[in-house]
Image (cartoon, rainbow, N blue to C red):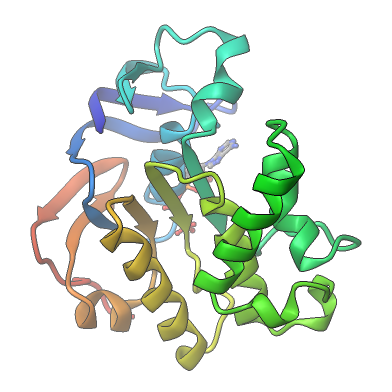
Length: 228
Ligand SMILES: Nc1ncnc2c1ncn2[C@@H]1O[C@H](COP(=O)(O)OP(=O)(O)OP(=O)(O)O)[C@@H](O)[C@H]1O
């Protein structure tokens, strides 16, 4: 599903974020990406949905060769990838329903399909009863669940989460983890960057540790490995 070989990334300001990295992730895996601040975690995951391009190295995601994909094909490629951020990034003036439906409207689904799919996915994140609320009327955990609903409404094969619990209290973080695990159980690959020692050491998954732009550890049921 994801294959990266010999990846280097130097930003235009001269900072080298990734310094020779090889990774293979299979369909259906759940992978934590951990490491010190500034180690290159976000850069690593941004390469997966072509938010950034490597300076050197090859990347295949969902059978798409990202070194060769044409600019006009990128929106199509991204339809198969859901992305969740620490700060939710919801549209503040749209309702919960509209925030989620938006992702389907841009791909011109029929209104009937949109309605069915949005309500299904709001049910999945347990927010059906708040479909008409706007983001400001929701707790942080609820807002993150809306952003997860938006990310999965299109049935992506890959869900990328960049510190999805970074702004949430511990109880709410466990709720979000439960939802991510449920999504993973349906066969969706989940790649999650996190600074949460508690989560990584409690819900054991594959752990890829990045330090100084390289893979320092890659363990099947790893632990966090750093002081929180
Ligand atoms: N757009 C950018 N332009 C220039 N330098 C960048 C850019 N994005 C990241 N960097 C630099 O690349 C390095 C790796 O950053 P990255 O955000 O990938 O690390 P991280 O491991 O995700 O950090 P954190 O845990 O703090 O989020 C850092 O030195 C950072 O300052």
